[in-house]
Length: 400
Image (cartoon, rainbow, N blue to C red; front, side, top):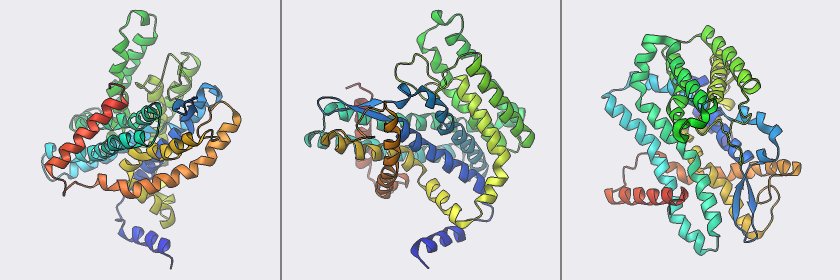
């Protein structure tokens, strides 16, 4: 028996019979969509000084926008997050405050880890000849996905209130959140848009991402069944189509350089429509997904991905940069440092995807330690890590 076969068998043996494989499978799918989307839609240009700058293939290939409908799976991530959180909330042994502190600490440790490491790396890379513009581009890419952690922490803090809402309103508890986002969208895009403050769109951040979390929590409380799943799927799909066809929302679910409107920063009503349709599909397919994952060879990768969730989220852009930065010093490398504006670039970037995956696996081998409790870290080391992380955030956000 090979080592891989033994590992698969051991994972299967240690999996409790009551484990909800469908929820873990959905979480793994949503997790993998994050690096896949960033690696496919995150191109570079290389200037005359050899520095890298961000570029998106969507600027040249608007017809590829529907690909973002598949790769934008944060709705699923928040859905299963809400589902898992309510189960954990009901099983908590201490107070609500202790439960929240534990959940937030699990989110915060990997973020501090990746930002502290990058803060220490920047002067070293600069000394090795990496251009300053490349360092800023890389820092921006590293910190961009981390906004998700802050939002997820915020909705996690609201879990007790979401539980009460689910008990009172059932599956309809998420409906007011949809209404808030629709109202804000009307104000920022409707006939009075010119008179509205530019910061108004920020009001959509919390209700926009809380929507799918509340759906998942209501699902975990058994307040949404198959009928609700069909309603979410059909209603979300119809609303999505109407927003595109009648209200001219941007087709891309991610930001496109040069476009005045964006769907995801902060989330628009189109994001919620997609999340509703995805959530409905997840609820309806739950049984089939669980059955499909009964095979140990399919289940084992799901377990590994779930155990490395925060590592994948925090370090996948580092894996991309581990290939792109050395390549930028060498010159023009097709699909890596060349502009994403030709059909050939798409095939070239696809060819790089396995390389990025291998690099992420190597990085994760050492970075996963940041997910575990820092039991051996002294107060001085924790303070140093916090200062490094704060310094990196200032640099990455262009404040220094």
